Each structure stands twice: as structure tokens, then as C-alpha cells.
Length: 239
Image (cartoon, rainbow, N blue to C red; front, top):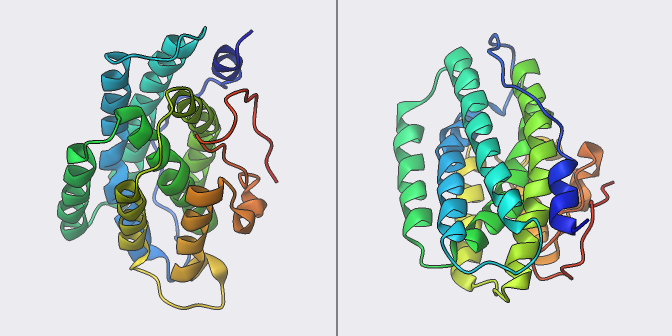
């Protein structure tokens, strides 16, 4: 069985459910609402994958099945985040600013699967642990379910990018950094790492450049496959 198929078959089935509003960690609220505004990136990742399906793909078993499966996951993720927003509400200013960030990602000229890979590895895999450390029960539960899907997405989309010989451009490096910085602008300097802006920026830097984030080992999600690694990737190990 190919690595692509093995990863797809490893997924766990789950269904988003509505939730009640709970208590967020004090000091995280502003960045939580900023992060929730970026839920607008979930369905564009689905569109990036569709654009990728319309281009040349690696001639390996399971590639198309992987991308189609991952597209369906993005619908679930979007629905799950909508349930969270239904419970917690949203901040109109952040919703508008997130749309501007979305526009930049959509207009960036890089290969769509490369954009998906970088978004998932160095943006989503920062936001998901942020939710898990600072959110209420509903947010933490959704983050855990999405994280299981994203482990496969990060591996598979990284493998596609590697197999296509795609390189990490500096433009996308700056864009992912600006995206995470906008979310974490709601934080400042803090003795608690999970409320400290620099901590989260450092995790994103590490995930982008090295595919690792030792600071997130408590989430058991500290190892994210990078697309520049060998394409002979099986299920990644974490922690």
C-alpha cells in the first residue's frame, strides 16, 4: 500500500456537533476571536486542493484519493468552526480583517497544493494547539478532532509538494508569518508560554523551517512532516 493510501485509511471518522459557550483562558480571548475569524481559510484550502487536482500530480497510487478525501474534511472543519462561532459569537472587525488575509492567500501565485501545505503546517498547526491550550471544552474537542485529520493532510500535501519538486518561496514564508502574527497580536509578553506572542511565533517559525515544534510536545503534535523531506513517508510520530 502506498504512503498516500495508508495515510488516508488511517483517518478516524467523526462528525462536528453543536456546543455551548464555555470559559476561555483569561488573556486569550482576543486572539481566540482572531483565530476563529480565520476559519474563512478552511474552504479555500478545499479550493486549493481542487485546483491541484486540475494540474499535473505525482504518478503515485492514492494521490487523487487523498486529495478528494481531504477536501471532504475541510467541509467538516468549516462546519465545526461555525458551531463554535454560533456559541461564542464573532468580532466584526476581525471578520473583515481575516477576509483581507484570505484575499492575499488566494491571490498568491504559488502552486495551490504548496499553499495548502504551508498553511496547514505552519499556520493551522499553530492555531490548533493554541485552541487546545486556551479554549473551552467545545473548542478543545473540535481542535483535537481536526488535528487528527490535519496530521494526514500535512503529510500528504507535503509529499505531493516534494514529489512535484516544489520549493518554499520567501513570499509564502512572509505570508504565513504575517498571518500568525495577526492572530497573536491579541497577546503580549507573558510568563505563561501559551499566552505569550513570541512563543507562538517561534513555533510557527520552527514548523515552517524545520517541520518540528518542540514547544508543542504537550499536544503530542510536535512533529509535522515538511514537504522538503523524503517522500517515502508513513504515519508521522509525535512527542
